[in-house]
Amino acid sequence: MTALTAEAKRTAQAWIDENLTELTEWHTHIWELAEPAWREYRSQQWYVARLREEGFDVEDGSAGMPTAFSATWSNGDGPTLLTYAEYDAVPGNSQAATTSETPREGLSRFAAGHTDPHSVLGISTLAGVLATKHAMTVHGIGGTLKYTGEPAEKMHGSKVVHGLRGYYDDADAIVSFHPFYMLPLCNTARWDTQCGAYYSKVYSFICDEPETWQLSSADPNSPIPASHSAARAPGANVALMQMYTASRTMLDSMLPATGGWSFSDAILSDGQATADNLPQRIARIQFSWRTPDIEMAEHILTILDRNAQAAAMMAHCAAEDRWIARSRPGRTNHVMSETLYANLEEVGAPSYGPEAIGVAQEIQRSLGREATPKPFLAETEQLISPQEAERLLREHMPAWQRNWTSDDYVEMSHYAPLVRFYVSRPALQPVPGEGPYPAWVMNALGGIPETIAPTIVTAGKTVSGTFLDLLTKPETLKAAQQEFAQRVAAEPMPALLPVDFEPPIDLPWPDYSGAAEHRHW
Image (cartoon, rainbow, N blue to C red):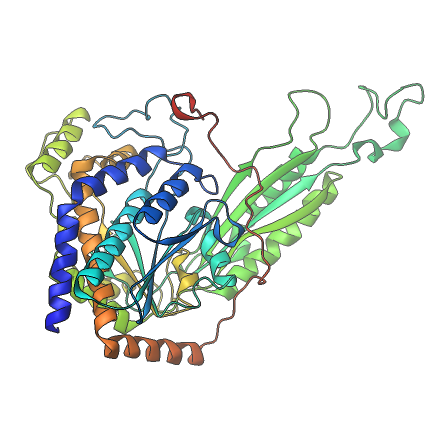
C-alpha cells in the first residue's frame, strides 16, 4: 500500500467515525419511510436532496423511472467508480424499531417494512461514497464517483433499465453491497458462485365482452346487454385462478427438483367490482422465478405462457403479459473480490457493544426467553474469506450448478468489473431447543440505531477503502478490467430485454395513501 493510499484511507475512516451519529439518523429516516417497490418517492427525494447538498450533479428520475436517480461528482482526471443505493421495503412486514412485536405507529401490520434492510444498504454505501469524496478532496486524488438510486430491487426493477439505457457504460469498476446473514455469506465477498437468473412477468386476464359468452341466453326483452338472470362469462378472476392452480400443479413438470430454483407469485388488485353479480373485468397475477441459469428460466417461461393462453380461453378472456424483470446470471471478478476483502479485513467485522447487547437481551426477555451474555449470532462478528465461503457454499449445491439464488446486482456485473460483498446485519443466536426467533426480531434489529450502526461503519469503511485502492493503484484496476474482458470474451451473455424496455411503473403495485401523520396502508 502506498503512503498516499494509506493516509487517504485513514482520512475516509475518520470521516465515517466523526459522522456516525448523523449517518445513523439518516438511516432511521429511510427505515421509517419504508416505501414499497416503484413507490419510493420520499426516500428517493431525500437522496436527491442530500447528494445535491454534498455537491453531486444529480439526475432526478433517471432512465424514465420516477424513483430512480443518477449522481456524479468529479475531482478531475481518473477512474469512474460506481456504487448505489436501494431503498424499497416489503409489504406485509411493518415493524417498529422496538423490542416487541408491533407495527410502526399509525400503520397496519400489513404495511411495508424494511426486512433486509435496504435502508442500511443505501446509507452504508452513501457513507462510503461521501468518505471517499472527502479523502479525494483532502489528498488531491483525481477521479469520478458515480452513485445511482436503484428502486424496486425486490422485483429486479431498475438495474436492468439503467443498464439498457447506458448508465453503467462509463463505470471502470463497480462495488455492490448488501447487508446479509445467510451463512456462509456473512462478512465476505462472493468468489465464483454468483447469483443466477431471475425472470418475472405479470399476466393480465381481461374480460371485455362478457355478453358474448353465450348469446342464446340473452333476454330479448332486456334493455341491457345481459339480464341478471342470463348466463355470462366466468370473468377474469376465474382465468386467474385457472392460471394459478395449473401453474402450481405443474411445478414438478417445470424443472427437476434440484438446483436451488424457486417460484413465487403475487396477485395485483385493480379494476375489480364489489361483490356484484357482474363478471370481473380484469385480474392480474405476477410470477417470479429464480434459476441457476437462463436455460432453466426459459423452460418455466414456456410453460407459463402456455398456461396463460389456456386459462384465458377457458374463461372467455384475453390474456396479456408484461415483463417485470429478466436478469442474467452474474459475472465474477477475482481481482475485485481480493481487493475488497483485503479492505474488509483491515476494517474488521462488526462488533456489538454493551448498548446493542442490552437491546438484544430485552428482545429475548420480551419473548419469555432467558437473556444470554452473547445474544448475537457468532458469525455476525467474524470474517470469512471469499474462498472459504465459496467452499462451504458448494457443499450444499450440485456439482453442475454454477449460480445460487438471485439478486439484480448481476445485471451490473455485465458492464464493468464488479465485486459483491456482504456485511452482517444484526441477528440473534438461536437457543438450542427453542427454535428460530420470529421474523419481526430481525426486522426490528435492522431499525434500532444501537444494533444497526456497526453495519454502517463496517460497510462504509470497506467501500471507501476499496474505492481508494482503485483510484490510487492503476495496476489493480487494470488487472480487474483485463479479467472482466477475458470473462466476457469466454462467455458472451447479451441482455435479455430490448433497449427500449419500459419499466413497469404504471402497474397497481402496493402503496401508501395519505401523507405525514395521515399516512396509512
